[in-house]
Structures are given as C-alpha cells and as structure tokens.
Image 1: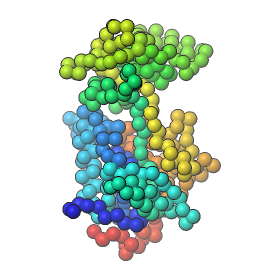
Image 2: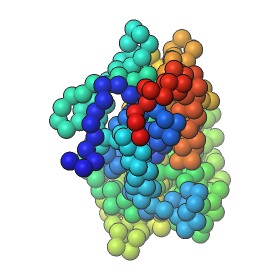
Image 3: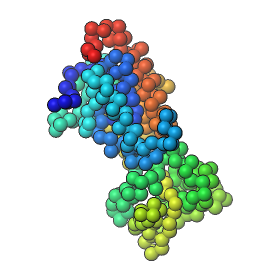
Image 4: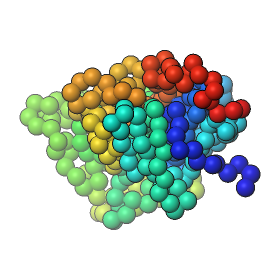
Length: 344
C-alpha cells in the first residue's frame, strides 16, 4: 500500500501526540537526521482543529483555520518519510523507562498493540477542555464552538471582541478572571453565566468579596439561572435559553470551565512533577522535571501539557528547543554515526 508505515523496532525519537507541538517535534527530529515516530489520536482531537480563523500564525496574513494548519503540518512531516513516520489514529497506552535508560512506548494502532523502543520521548498530548453539561449532555455547545462563535482562549481570540456582546460560561475564580480579562478588549458588554452554580464557591472571604466587587465595578452582569439550550446558529449568534423561560442573545461566547482532562497518566507513571494547576513541570528546554527535582533524562513535554502559555507559536518553539536539546545531549552517538541513520 502506497504510503503505508512500516514500523521499526526502535526510533531515535518517539513523539506522543499529533497536534501542533507533536507534529513540529517529529518534523524537527527528522530534519536533524534522526528517525522519529509521531503518534496522533487523530487531528479532530486537537484543540485548534475546529477553529475557523487563527490570526497569529506567521506567514498567513489573512488568517488560517486550525484544520488547514494541521493538514499542512502533517504534509510537511510526511514529506520526510521514511525518516519520519506519522501514525493516526494511534493511542499511546504506556511509556516505560527501561533499566538501560532508554524507553519503551506502547500504543494501539490498527486494532493491535505495538511496542517500540526510543532513546528520547517527547510528550505532546495536550489537554482537553471541559464542556458545559446542558440537560445532561455536552454536545449542545458543539455547533457554536465549531463555528468559532464560542471560544476557549482569551489570548487567541480576545482581539475579535471590540464592540461585541460577550457571554462567559463558568462560575469559579477562573471564570470571573476570564470575564475581567475580556474587558481589556473593549467589548460592548460582558455577562457571566454560572449555569445554576453558585458564584465563586471555590474561594473564601476577602478574595470572594474582592472579585464580586470588581465584577460590579466593571459592570459585568451575573446570571445564575440554569441553561437548558442554545439557539441562533444560523444567524451566527450565541442565543442562550434558561430554565425560567428567559432568553438572551450574544455576539460571542467564551467557555471558562477549565480542563476536563490534563492527560497526566503517562507523565505521572514516569515520575514527573506537576504544578498547582496540574501541568507538567519542565525547564526552558522542555525537559520534564522529576518529583525529586532533577530532569528525567531523555523525557520532554511540549505544547499545552507543560506549564507555560498555551499558544501555537509557543508550542512550536518548545518543540524545536526540546528536539535540539535532545540532539545535543541525548543523541550524540546517533548524530555522529551516519551508518545508523535511516537511508534517505
């Protein structure tokens, strides 16, 4: 079969995750003449896959969709075959550090369990946004999210808000801070929808009163009624229906519900250290820090999984740094021995 990937028993670099950061890591490893295997669950699992317009990607002055950008990255990686291999859908189930200091990566692909060795592992699984449950289901919000009417990233899409009415979904400190941050972009109004949950139940005393006071001072309305559905998709508006029969319509929605999953099972199994928010702690080169403090040799985390800013250019930069560091520190023998490289 043309283009069919033939698995090798061992790779210089195995990348777990096929989003923007993972694809860049696999690409860079191959450009440095190392064998790389990138395992992706599928492009639709990427946080940007459904983004209709991203305006901060260099080289695309008119913007580009998340789907198109991922397609371009996959095409770039596949051009470097056979040195670079990309498997999708493939789901990593375990990463084990062996007594020799290298790694074994176990994953599911084509309904079979496979295991390959790796000198370096780069974790790029990202995180999963939490969706609002509306009458027991999470899918009612999907059409609005897929069209970019409901967003998830203030730093990515806040610039689209001047003069527009905005609804923020959430009730905790993070949601309140998101609503306050959105005021910076000069929207016509910001309304916080707590979906029946008490406002700021996760903070106490002075902090709660301070945040309540700031909402009032900024003129941010708080609606506590339970949401039972959405409407307005044809008009590209975010219409919200409430349990008491009332309805409100906004130009834009922002979900501020935090994360459904931090994809932390594999890094925890390897002894990684996490920050207070649940992100993998790394140094400036993406090396995963151990629970004891020092970095874990040959193990990196890039993209949304690690502590730092969740931005695509930042993810690319960290992927580059991680691979270059691995090239210099953990792969010197392969770098200096061309005979061990896969022929072009």
